[in-house]
Image 1 (cartoon, rainbow, N blue to C red):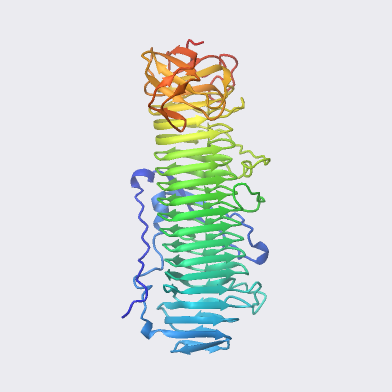
Image 2 (image 1 turned 90 degrees about the vertical axis):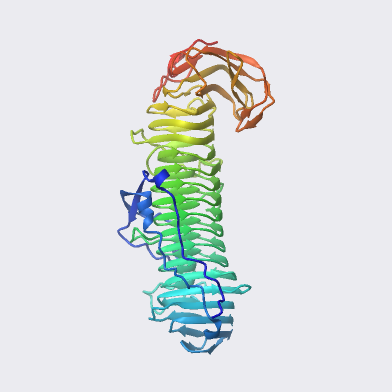
Length: 631
């Protein structure tokens, strides 16, 4: 048997999570009511789904049900010599073979098998309606399908339908701008390609879908895209699989008035997920670029996503315009991501876990937001624009290279509903997230690098901070009401390095564990002015060029030792190489001596200013900890 298309493989999602995320809590989704059917009046509304959750499962357990699909060995193989052919000719259809009934410009496929379609149908429909348990394969070999009254490709009943796009083929499917239904109670089909059965798309050919009424491609069961060069334009949602949307490869370009890629089963906690293992995805959506009722799971792929017009656009309060949204969880293992979103770039009402990948995120609200927990185990994360960069009730940074630019807090550990800050990252649009302090809020830093450039608090924790390793560099606020570091519980530091500069009004340092020093300068230093710290032997501990003006420097390193004397300089120059403003190697040429001090306690304070400690304001000399000698 000649194989027209090689089998592309059953979906296998391999996530090695035991070592890094097994202890992370996550919710399992279940909804009391099914999702409402879209109507033209609702197109692009992007209303948030309501999910009732139970926090019993680990992340591994929550995702375990999301690893099987309708895909099977042999799905994408067929014998062209035994296939039935349908030749489309304007308003007529010629059939060679059995299993098809034709009435004018409508063909109904009534039996399982392989059907090869070619030619153009100006105003008609290809329908699949069969009780057979074997799959129906539709080979689109140069097809133009159009309808003036409904969906030109409609699967009314089947066990499984597979669309195959042969190499070199170019296919177009366009539906009507308004549909004519048999009765007022009917509202389906509502997409140019609409299936009530499991649907797969594979091959290397091209498919253009114009969803003029509502959606472009919709499956009321599962939808697998294994290949093809697919371009979808839709008035509402671009590509929708109710039970799941799985993308394994190919190239997918979506422009939509509503959500771009979507899975919306709200009745089954094991369904309603989006999984991507590869391919190139480019989405420009009026709503969410990727929206899963339960989980978004990514193990590879190249993503270029724009939602709601991008991070500088304005959207109303009823529109969800997030880049990637998994209501229960988002798990990203690998991939390349460029996201420009009016709302959060990556969002979950439950948990977000980033194990790897490269990210460039610009957001009108948060760069990455999770209501319950956010864990970064690796990868390169650049938040180039945001209201708040990283936000969750519990944030754990185990590894990775993270850069955050924020118009408010760079890292915000807090609880409550997200979205009150949406738009604050845009010029002239105010916003504020207000959260109370609670003992269940934690920031854990166990490795990696974190660089924060924030106009509000650099790191704001309405709870407790624990840091055991890694490097944290904060270029913090210039306003006195904010601080480079701000925590309400304790800050235990047992390893790693912290450099935090900013205004002096609310400056803080860690208060337990490793030695730290907080220096208040008598004058504000201009942006770009070097700050340099060395020990009594003249050995460099720090040479740093902040990108904002500053009047306080908080520093902690394993190199600080009790009883040792250190000298702090401002200005001067260095022949080293800056990395995130911190100079590596080279020779420092001194500027002006700003302070000389001896480490006397866990917290050594030099100069006056700041506040007494967690949660309280201080007067002159009221910085955290004891007062070391200084000038």
